[in-house]
Image (cartoon, rainbow, N blue to C red; front, side, top):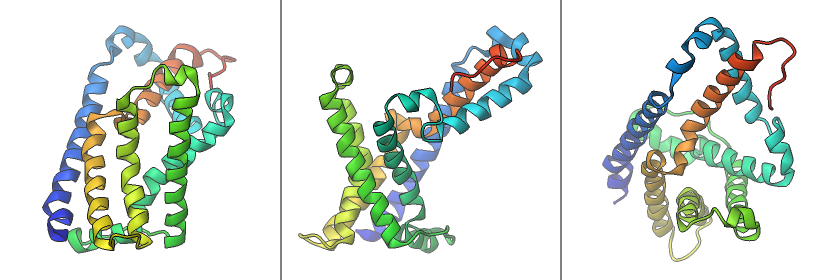
Length: 226
């Protein structure tokens, strides 16, 4: 079972993930009507590049934009959730052991204590995100069961991994297999669900930043909306 899950199934999951993300990016950029502003983009591309870099940079910093400063508490919740969601799977010791066994390389790894703290952070942040959707009328109005399902898909590998690491009954193998399965489900789901913002965030922020930079940033004295 373990060999199947960490062998062919893992290969399949990564293949769907990478190919799906590439397709989503291609579809995103093909959907943009750059030709409508081709003169502006051609003549002021340097401002577009600066605007794209600036947009991504400030959105990756807590309170770096006006939008982040509107809800300071949930800004921290969002960042804790996403930082743990991305860093923990990549730099976890156990995951890098599998990388070494299957593909012959490994990355820098974090300590088990750090991974444990990030995992707890993801789980706690997920609880706050659920409570936010329930408690805030303007968010609850836009929330559907699909949103809770996506959050569950993203969080399940962390819950099962935490339970496996701490040897919670019924058994280590039970939680380990469930952890691997939920992790692979998340990889497969990313290109097909809202989790695709894992990739599209950078594309959309770059596009919006470039557009704003070209149309307004080229005029000296104009400020950016972040």
